[in-house]
Length: 367
View 1: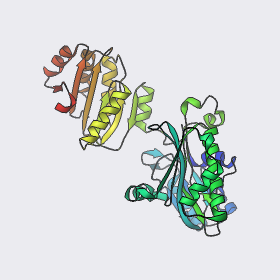
View 2: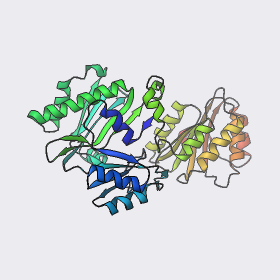
View 3: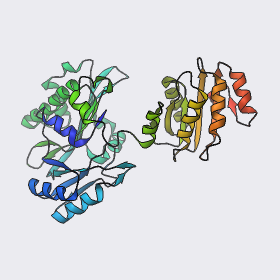
View 4: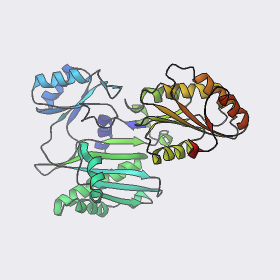
């Protein structure tokens, strides 16, 4: 479950982490009053759980009451990357000396928790780390309880801090580790965590994702509810239909039966130089209707130019899949679909599709 910024900061403040003064508001008038309480200049920030808010125009610096009003008026109720903005966070404008990145996440590959840090932060963090990977600090722990203050100081020293500054930043890393553990988080990060001109460290941004399976004991987080932007409109529609669907950034839709099979197919599509647009798992034993619903959902994605479908029929009958494909083909937004069909009733399924001129393959490398 994704927690939106202002609520993430409220939670982290209970761990004595340094949070900027700010207030969440839902009208331009409230934004102006909040700015007067905090003191100008301020930053007006759209409260949606999406990446790249700053580049999308969702973060605005305002130096006057009029600028605050106009920024809030423009953002509240607007759509940012397809997500409606319900309100904004009006926050003190920090005198920034340096921006850094600090976070904790689950590293599923090594079955550990990873502490990540970089000497750059903000909107260009991904590009900077990609170009200069040596600037990314990674420390893994089998159990996060083993993260101690001296580990936090080690992070700070990697970032170039010494003396009292290293201790202060080390304490922040240590408190973040405690919060990550106690919140059953999958991700907790501050990007950027800023060093101010007066020598403070402040979490200018905060992001938390809590494990859905732990919400029964994370009652405070569960009561908050999913953040705006936690799922796209297509992901919401898929969830309501009982389908497992995830939007990605490319233009090739990937469909299969079984999460592992779909993920393996995504890897193969990427290796072929084709960026995936979405992940759709129709599940085992999918009926004709379920296959049709899933494909129509994928076809409705405006980024999708073609679809790769990989079916390995066990309890899933290839004839049901074939019938679903034929019905989905009638959709006005139909996209070219390339199908690998193996398993239960595969010959019958292939025959159904081939009689309608649809290409079917035995192996993915034939596509």
